Length: 291
Ligand code: AMP
Ligand code: ZN
Ligand code: FE
Ligand code: FE
Image (cartoon, rainbow, N blue to C red; front, side, top):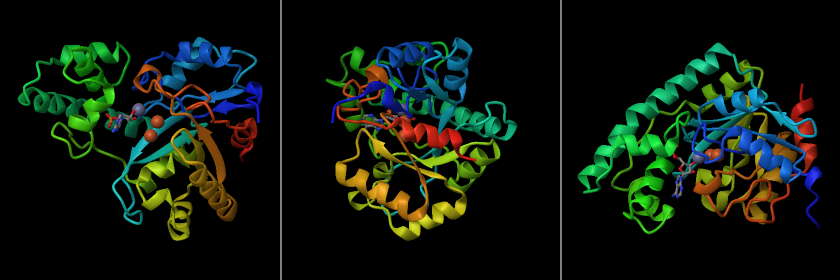
């Protein structure tokens, strides 16, 4: 099947408001040049990416919905060690409770960053918080990719991924855990803000083969989950089919996105993932029309 741009969307995008390298206006421009039919900006633990995009003005020919990606605790019914991220779509950007929780997550990151820095320094790396701040930019919220970027630019690692593999990934010497919101709370907050909670990249939960038990999906639905991100850059075709089956079986909405981070994930392209991702615009309409 040929790639038909206006019929395709990307509902999982990071900007410089978190750990993407393009600003929200730059993302709008890029999405327009790729003729994407609609996008959602889903920065980690902040609504600023969506806010800045709206302030810049959404091109008439493109659909847009607000978004966020919340770092949640992995519920104990999922075996494995991966991450549990909850996407929130169509949220009211001014919801006080959602904003308060996001602020708590942001503050937890601020507490964590100097601790990551200390660990890297004690491993012998000459790094300062100023350098990390510069990598994140004036509006950016610092994440591990910024540490990786600075380590790479100073020649301390041979690649961005090596910084994670050797130092920053879970369990590695410079890893520091961070506060996460309980999964049911993340779902509840998104709904209370008028939004649609969606389980992000289920394969990254780290269950065997990325498979989810029916009982686990039922438990998430009981928490108020509305959708599942079946289309995703790093999902295999078998995984995508599995999540589409689960969505049909359990009456969940389906979403999809590239998880574009710009230069921090250079192999992942906006809208197209590794080149073969195609996310039908119907999914955007279903999100938009969900009542
Ligand atoms: P943080 O929000 O600071 O915990 O960083 C999470 C971000 O780091 C993710 O969104 C990814 O972009 C990136 N990341 C996490 N693990 C890895 C890894 N093993 N290799 C490369 N990037 C990673
Ligand atoms: Zn990220
Ligand atoms: Fe994520
Ligand atoms: Fe993401």
